[in-house]
Image (tube, rainbow, N blue to C red; front, top):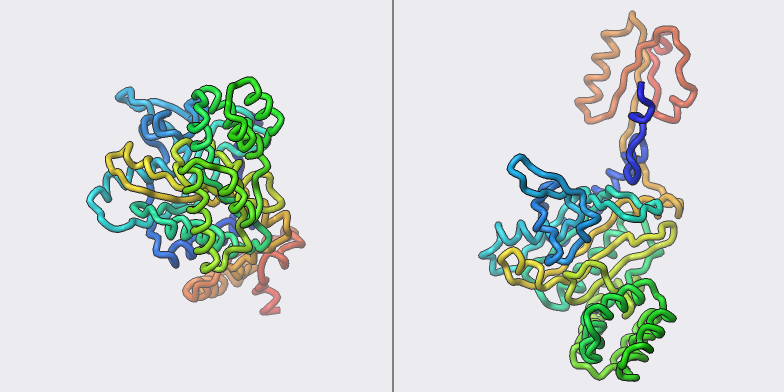
Length: 392
């Protein structure tokens, strides 16, 4: 046998046994939160037409998509990101809806990362999209819901950092910076490279005041005081409006009781170019990547024929499970197992007993005692019922 067939490709892994059961328990808990907020489930295909995730949509770069062809020669891709799929579905099924549409989902995404660095290429994500609502109330709702889901999972020590796309875009527009420089600047700020930002701007003829603000963006993060500082240091109307929006979102999050879990980061710039307003990421210790990612995308549905403001987020299950494990936050297995050991003489009784237990909704397994030595750890696996022992 080819031993290679026993292993998975790089970037994917098997999940089984107790780990798989714990993951399913967490999925159920998070799904309950979504239902409590009034979100209804939707399932979209695992693969879609290439154009759903094309460069004009502003999602994953083409080089990181898993692409293949159907019989008609159409280019298809495995879903790398749920939001464009949901936007496409909303454009088809909710075109005439005049009220907000709340959709939730659970499934897998596939991204062929160019640099692996231990990152999985297949991830389970659970998330929500609030379509047709452009208010600060909607922004606060999705952030509060994301925080609620993390609390429900068992986490208590986490922080959701919130930024606003318009703050950066207003500054570069006011400074008249060309598109190529903006993209370079975006990468430097995203990587918190203050020295690189300063060096890049020093080679351009940019207003000194704006250059100073842009240089400080990688370290402009903190609590409510950061909002006040950001408002005072900028003169651009759009930038000031973005800060006022964040202040209103914070006011609403206080009502939700989530203030202690949020902070602000004006250097947060997403690689997803469809975001137009708030963006946020949730972090905790025990994992290097965000456990929550989301934001506002008011123009995305226009690509699918429905001009309407929207916002949403995803919880990355793998990252969340890693955090729970490394923080030693237990996820109790809810299934009570019974293991019936029987001999040939008690076979019929064993099957009758197992059938009765299953009718009661209990988990029951059968093992025929045939003289082989049974594993010593069976008592830790389930409640043991030995029929031979019972009848002596």
